[in-house]
Amino acid sequence: MTGIIILAAGSSSRLGRPKQNVVYNGNTLLQNTINAALATDCEKIMVVLGANYELILPTFEHFNINILPNKNWQEGMASSIRLGLASLLELQPESKQVIFTVCDQPYLSPEILNGLIVTQNQTKANIVASNYGEHLGVPVLFGQCYFAELMQLIGDEGAKKLVKKYIEQVENYPFLLGEVDIDTLDDLEKLG
Image (cartoon, rainbow, N blue to C red; front, side):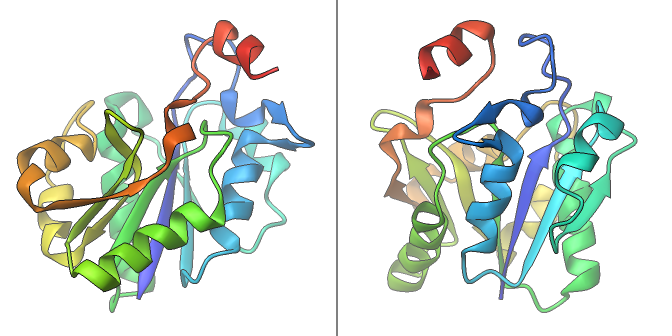
């Protein structure tokens, strides 16, 4: 069984407003990510919110997903990873793998998320990362053998730390537009 954890707790300080609520192609970036997750074969979808919780929640609370408020979001990405994974395992203890993704990749699709799962099924790799051409990144799938290490991440450490640590064991799935993300006004303007 596979769960998806959408990490959306950051303050979007470089953008100056919540990137989760930026509208692209008729939906917010977060709604686009949730829609992609809902169209996969994954059993549980968790969204971790933190900064600007009250502004973001009304934009998607009608979705059939699990919403996790992260009171410790200021600690950094690791707190959202720990909260999301602990909550997933509480709701679905039989989870064999988890996909971590973020909400600011406008070109994320169900095909990318399902592609990670198919690649894992074919290769039996315990880490499958998205390949942007020259970089590996999110969305990324981890098998349960890494759950304990994910729960030990601290501060601004993200899942990339484990991808780098175990790079020899990582399979990749092509997501060339994955490097397009929205962090600044310039990024937003380039998106059009």
